[in-house]
Length: 288
Image (cartoon, rainbow, N blue to C red; front, side, top):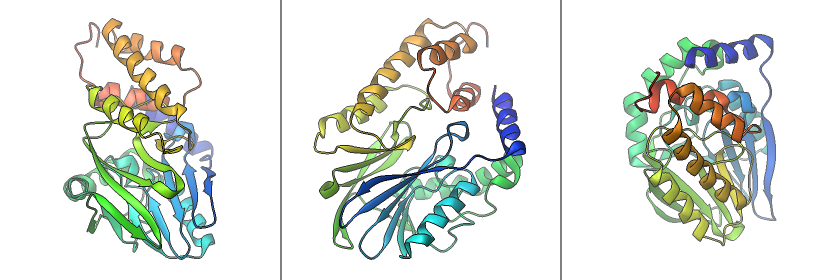
């Protein structure tokens, strides 16, 4: 299945790589947030560019280098320095894309994420270069700063940093901007994109329910898909429930995938299903 997914992506590249979309997720006097979203057929990865009065803060770095270059065009146009570039977790689709476009920015991550990228980043980059060729960056910008949970004021704006465990990733960074009612959830939230299932979903559902209880945050920024309102939380919880039901009642990978596609025909990121079924989701299928 993974081979088929890569062939489909290779065909897209051979024709012409589609452009990412740029969304203005927030526009206030002191803060603007631009969300760059890769096309659905290219996994819908997001990068969030937070424009403060005098500087820029960027969250996550894309998978494919051309989309990181689009982010660079955006940040250059804003004519403010990038003072912090955050990596939310150590899955490669959020950090291997930006090394060429942003070789010198200061990169921040949780301690566990920093250590994971230091250990696996170089070999992961080389593997993806072999799979996808020149649309993968040639270099990495590995986190050099450890972000600790807590509150910080950056350019006059309060940020809240939290560590979330056992959701889509084992460890992930949550960033909140209370004054703007913005919750940067990254891969805890997917919007109209198939969620990447690699095991038990209980921790993921717990993380989503935590956001559900923080009703003061009305703008939810996902790791895959466009900026969303709070309804995306309910949608993702229902999706995870459907996944668990489909896993319990499907004898084969093909049957399971067919159920997801029938229930969510409008969702992007279909290749993500192929990848996790081939490599990450372990189950005793009747017919493998």
